[in-house]
Image 1: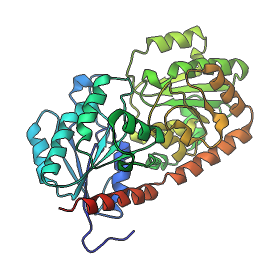
Image 2: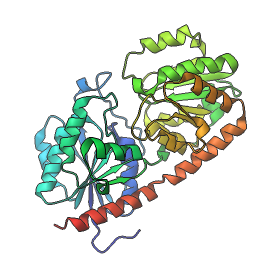
Image 3: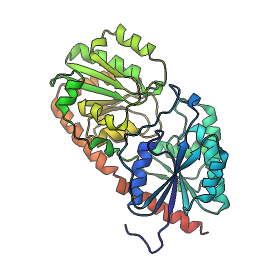
Image 4: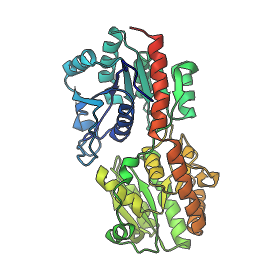
Length: 391
């Protein structure tokens, strides 16, 4: 794609490093979009009150790669407790179109003010809806989202299920919804660490098979199913280990009790905290197989997007967009079914040809959800929406 003589400038709103939130996705999308047109990113100085985040605060992560790009201007001025910053950014942004990344209930007042300002300036608004429904089924999320979506001229979702939800739950017409995949999070995979050195760091032997459960530990992600399945697998395949790495969003006690009752404590490695961006590769490089045993889910997973970028074999549950990461349906199992998950894991670990084929499939999926292709599809939406809403 080439620039026109007067290229449209896009204003994005979301989070960027060193803030966390949705920063991995926003970083990759903004950098790819800036390759083809001017981008102005409206980000946050202060994102959430600490009391709303598990663990007492959303600590910054300064280990993300640089975002230096000549076509990307970043404004880090939004502050959750200062509405003046919301108004100033809404009226001060130079974008011809606002593209809002929507996922988090506490941000609704800020997004509403930004959207109102853009509407008063007669500029169109596109939403990428990362969470159509709240992960823990919080009813107010739907109510607030419905109010916010009245500002939207077009909506982007990651899965067909999300499209159906927007139509059914929010009454949005199908012609106003586009399905565009969540891109592969490949910037994490570029460090090139030695697998043997990493495994020694974890106390793992070269011949052990390593399962990885990665990401924020929340009940809907099915860690209890993964632990139960691992115990079944370990009884038949002793040379395997389970790594659990992620920030706790719920008490750990019940999982620790489960691990002890199943007598697999010595075979489970835990890192129960946020994993900084520059350490993510360590966990995926050590792993032979990544597990996404979610009980329920609507969208696509950032963990899945990272796993395919690393070319890692995946076993997922049949929920939301998780099956999109897997080409062979043998590795898609029913939710809340530890026996089926355990059987699938055993089939993988018992035959390296399965793991090799799954790794090739992951690389194919990563290529299919490349950021240039995502940007091309998104740009087509921008051009169409702006042609329908001339200033």
